[in-house]
Length: 88
Image (cartoon, rainbow, N blue to C red; front, side):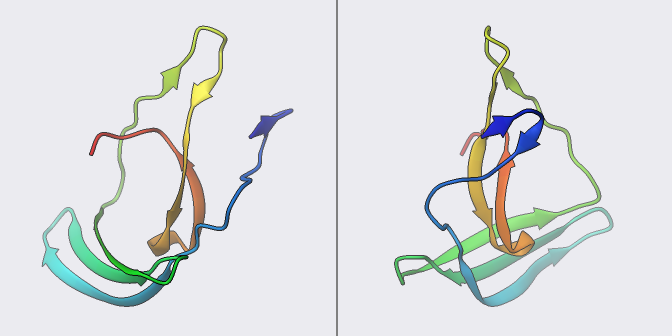
């Protein structure tokens, strides 16, 4: 939630515990990794993601000036983060 220019994440703990990590592809510009993680409910899930030197984002701005953001746990960053919504 945003208040007076500060960002604060609130709500349920979404922490995922990394079990293992495999480098699936390594190129000149990016790397593709596949991790397995223990979810907060105890189940195991896989995560495939790309690491690279930078990116571009499009922000959703409502008529009232508020941004639409998504709170998500990012295991490779070891914590919750706010990010723009993305297609899946």
